[in-house]
Length: 99
Length: 295
Image (cartoon, rainbow over the protein chains, first blue to last red):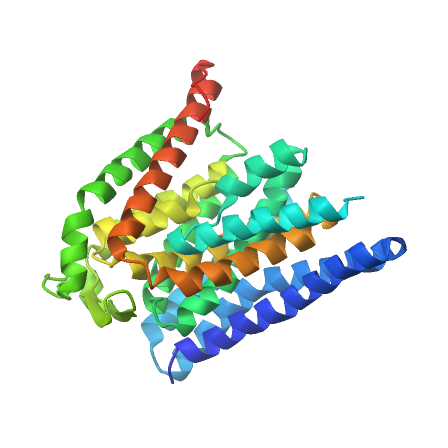
C-alpha cells in the first residue's frame, strides 16, 4: 500500500470538516449576533476535530506500516503515539499548559 | 463581541501567517502571537493558546497538500517525531523545575548559526537541485538501516530530485533539543526542524519544508489540548484565526514548489535572523534585563 494515501485522507478529512465548522461559526457570528452561543459551539467542535486529527494521523500511519509489514516504522509510529498520549496525561496531572 | 471588520482583519492576518508558514515549513506563531497581543489586545496566554491551535490547523492543512504533492518524507517525519515528542515531553516537565530563560540565548545562537549555514549554502543547493546531485553521498549505518531516502518533483525546474538521508543520529539528537525547546519555551518547532534536515541530513530544502510542516502538528496538538482543557481558548477568535491560517496554508503550499529553491533559502535566512534576534532579545531581557532595540 502507498503510505501517502491513507495519511492524506485522514488529514484532508480533518481539514474539510473543521474548516466547514469554522466557516459556519464565523458566518453565523456575523449574520446573527443573537446566536453567538451556537457559533461558539460550532467553533468548539471544529477545534476538537482539528486537535484529534494529528493523533489519528499517527494511528493511521501505525496501521498502514503494519499492513505493509514495515515493522521498523510501525514501532516508531507506536513510540510517537505513546509519547503523545503520555504527554497529554502528564499535562493534565501537572497542569503544565497555563504556566 | 468582535466586529465584522476585526473578524475580517484577523482572517487576513492569519492568512498571511499561514501562507508564510507553508512556504517555510513553520507554524507561524512568530507572526500570530505579537499580532494578537498588539493589534487585538488579546492577553498573552490566550494569544499563545490561539497560536498553538493555528499551528495544528496549518500543519494539517499545509501538510495534507504536501503529502498529496508527494514532497513530504513520511518515514523521515515519523523517525524524527520520536525524538521531538520525547524532547517536548521532557521540556514540558522541566518547566516545572527550572527556568528556561537562559535557553533563549542558546537557541538564538543556534538560529544565527543555522541562518549563516543557509545563506552560505544557497549556491551549492541550487546546483545540487538542478543537477539532481543529492544521491552522491555515503549513508551512515542508521540511515541505511531505515533505508532513509526520498524524491520529489521540483515544479520550478521541471524534474525529479532524489536524495539519500544521512546523519540520522545527529538529526535525531538535534530534533530532541528542538522538541525540548518547544516544550520549555513554546517556540522554534518549525525552523529548527527544517534546518536540521536541510543542513545536517542532506534533505533538499523543499522536502525539508514539507516534512517539517507535516511534523509540527504532532507536538502542537498535545499542547493545544492542554490549553483547551485549561480554559484558555478564546472561542471568539478561534474560528477566523484557524480558518485564515488554513486558507493561507493552502495558498502557500500551492505556490511553494513553483518557487526556485535559491529564493526560498534567502527567505528562510531572513526569517532565521529575525527569529534569532527575537529570541536573543527575549533571553537578554529575562536573564540580564538588557533591552535590545525592537525591529
